[in-house]
Image 1 (cartoon, rainbow, N blue to C red):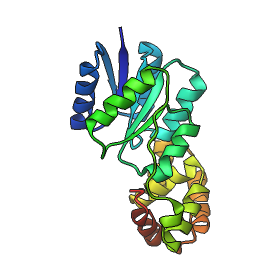
Image 2: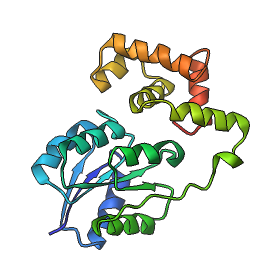
Image 3: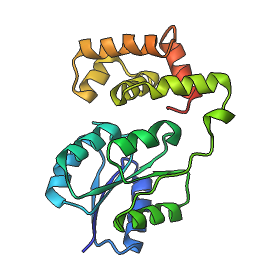
Image 4: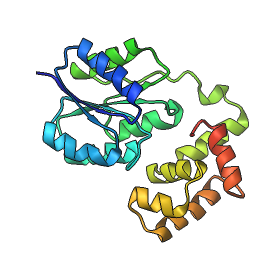
Length: 208
């Protein structure tokens, strides 16, 4: 009997995913709305497939992927997210995901990805915008983003969304000092002058 774990904090999106899974014959569908709920549910239910959003409360999706990979579970992960594939697809591949499906795609694309993964294959999208076709500024900024670690990218997003160092530290289970160090390092790495410019950078590149 096929089973799935849906990790999604938006009820409407979660309902759509569950509808797709039922159409594909899944009888056992479990849910998690926070990233820090995933591992306990994974161990409890041992689903065949995990449908994972990357923007989650509690623990972000990239950290969740790393933990699933370390667990060496048989569960295969389909990332279903609104975040830009240019910056996230390769990271998800390296973290052990079996598929990456943008939420902007049709639900038939999600069905196809799930079927492909269940058949033992991977499913990643062909990126249409190459570095050659990108402007000089956009290309250089993408290169800067690609140099960031997963944790740095996650903290950049939180900072761009207006979260304080203290809030980020609590979400990511880090010390205030560690987050402060990351913040200073990020401003230097992406070459911005302030948090206002950092937010502009994130918006310009579709990170928030």
